[in-house]
Length: 327
Image 1 (tube, rainbow, N blue to C red):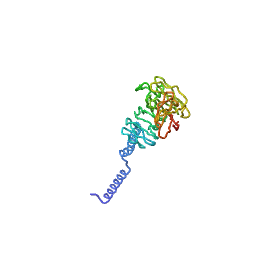
Image 2 (image 1 turned 180 degrees about the horizontal axis):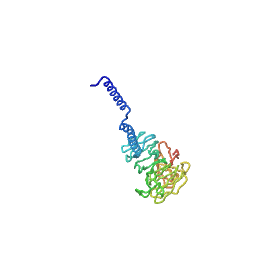
Image 3 (image 1 turned 180 degrees about the vertical axis):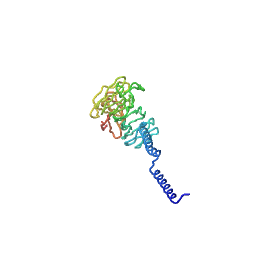
Image 4 (image 1 turned 45 degrees about the vertical axis):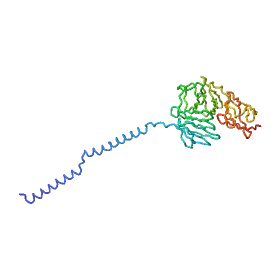
């Protein structure tokens, strides 16, 4: 049996052992836990990098091209569109193959073509059809009247010079032999015009005779295998079946070079005259056919007012009005 002193020494020894054990637990740091704490941020950083790369890949994905559209931006008077001849409205979008756009007396419309291609100003008494509307080719057909085009310099190339000509050889094609492409083409009964970075006007007479005058840039006219380059301030004329005329300087104003009016019967008047070859002539609102050199001769009905009203209209911005009394 333990005496009192031995028992006390035993208790002190046991107490010291417990204290030492408790101290060892407090100061010891488990290595596995430390490793987990150090490696966890590494795993997070890797995950964030993967997500960041995926977002970057998505951002760099190429966007599909915007569809080409034609929108009515400015409108004056009576302008109808489509097979049923519905009036057009501001902001209306017109479709290829949707029918003919027709402007009435004292009426006009400005069409905007997106993707920086340009705009088309359609004057009164004009008939225009949207033939194609795509990234590969945007084209309009003008059967009669006057349009003025402003084509952007930054637009995509939409008309390929390597494509075969469609239709009759009696055509005007605004492109050079270099095969340069153009964003927009205007077709007339005498051919096709297409340019880039250019402002130019097109007149189409009742018989399909086409006058082209360039304001800015250049247009290359092709007909019957001959190419004529039209620079600013110049014009050419193409009659159906003929080659382009030599370039000439655009006259400063639209005018009669000659005019003779005589009464041939009670209600009929013979009008004979000449204008510059590129200009259109209207008598009392009716378009008159002119020869390649601008001469014309026509019978018109004498109005009750006994006054004839003439309009001479150039393909760009020249326009002159005359009024003449007839007995």
